[in-house]
Amino acid sequence: MKYALITGAGRGIGRAVSLKLSSMGYHTLLNYVHNDLAAEECAKMISDSGGESTLLKFDVSNREQTEAALKNWSDANPGEYIEVLVNNAGIRKDNLMLWMEESEWQDVIGTNLNGMFYVTKPLLKSMLIKRAGRIINIVSLSGIKGLPGQTNYSAAKGGVIAATKALAQEVAKKGITVNAVAPGFIISDMTSGLDESMLKKQIPMERFGKPEEVASVVAFLASSEASYITGEVISVNGGLYT
Ligand code: NAP
Image (cartoon, rainbow, N blue to C red; front, side, top):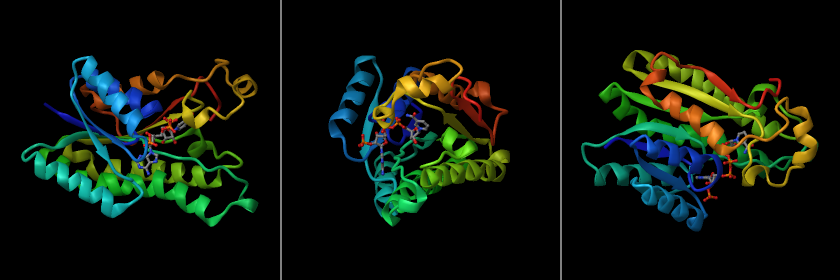
C-alpha cells in the first residue's frame, strides 16, 4: 500500500483531496490541528468507502511537533514511506497592513509557509532514496496576484510558489515532482464569512468552486499521468484573472 500525507485534511479542500487520493488506492495520513470531530468524520468517510487512513494530529507551524509526529509514524511503519505529500494546511488572518498585528503576520507565515518547510523536509530523504515522490502545495490566487487586506497571506502563498519552483529543480532528476495548485474562491469554512453573491460577479463562471474541483487537479498531479510536469502552478479559479 502506498501512503499519502495530506495536511489540513479534516475539512474543506484537504478533506476532498483525502477522499480522492483514497479512491486512487492510497492509505491516507490525515493531518489536522484542532478539530478532532471533523478529522474523525473524514476518516469515517474513507473507511465507509473501503479505504484506509490514519489520523496524525500535529501543528504544522511547530517544527518540533511536526518532526516528532513524522518520526513516530516512520518508526511505527518500518520500510514504508510517504510517496505523496499535499501541503494543504492553511489559515488566513486578513487585515490592512496599517492595522496588522505582528501575531497576524507571524501566524499566517508560520502555518502557510513555515509549515510547508517543516513537513516537506523530513519526507524528502525517503523520496530521494526511493527516487519517487509527488509534492503538491496548495497555494492561492492571492499568492500570484496579491490581494489587498492579505499582505501576510499573499506573502506566505507567494513564498510557497517560489519554493515550489526552486525545490522542483533540486529534485527533478530524482523522480520527484513538485507543483502547486492555486485555488480562487472555493466553498469551505475559510470562505464562509465572505459575501459570495458580491464576489461571484468578478468570477467569469459566476460561482465559487467546490473542494472536489481542486481535489481532481491534485489527484492528476499525484498520478503517473503527470510525470513530466514539475515546478508548475495550476490555477483552479473559474476564470478569475490572475
Ligand atoms: P479550511 O476549511 O479552513 O480547513 C483548513 C484545514 O487546515 C483544517 O483541516 C485545519 O485543521 C487545518 N490547519 C489549519 N492550521 C493548521 C496547522 N497549524 N496545522 C495543521 N493543520 C492545520 O480551509 P480550506 O478552505 O479547505 O483551505 C485549504 C487550503 O487551501 C489552505 O492552504 C488555503 O489557504 C487554501 N486556499 C483556500 C481557498 C478557499 O477559497 N477556500 C482559496 C485559495 C487557497 P483543523 O480542522 O484541525 O482546524
